Length: 263
Image (cartoon, rainbow, N blue to C red; front, top):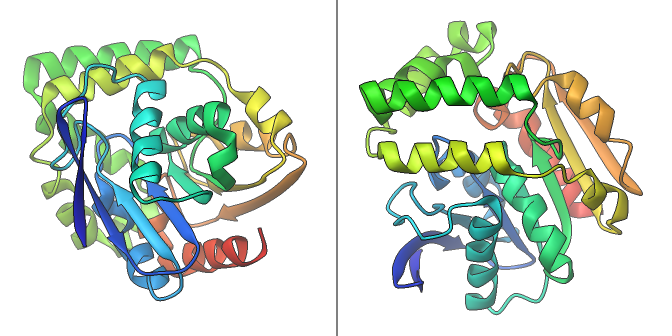
């Protein structure tokens, strides 16, 4: 079921399906909630699944505060709208950054969380320079031209060979992104702080899923932080780049299933 909330007079869309313990899946940059379609189908007969379209993505409108903290407030509003006391939150890439901001402020609403191809580290200076170049490209050529250029690099060489049609369909689904939204996300990611303290201090179980061929979140970065939480689970998707929910769907779902059952 598609639902909306008004947040600061802006429409925010999210899908709400199934019953049981609540689980929120948070998409990343250049995606919307549909990136989790395989997970929604797999888990909706066991859990109450919520997949938001973040402000500026999908059909959701941009809000005034597009920072990681501002976007976390939107997730918090959805949790309240659904009358959820505590839920598990799984964040992909930028969605993981937002999840960490949510846990930092509203830890009492999150009983476990996962960083799916994501990191608690702040952007390095090298990463910031890459994002700045991306912003200039978006300004010159538009949002979709940027995503058409950048998105294939998120998949492993094997995935490009094995699921080219799925990758092309995914890229074609990104036409609605505005340059303003993509630039806002990039600026927010560049400004986000290091949140390794959240990992060190949490009493919740934390899931780390890394891709062996991930160029966006290197495996080495994940290995530097997966030992920080008191209760930590690490899994490596050996055939995946940055899009393991699409590249190794069955394995990713089994990993998530185990985590959700034993958290």
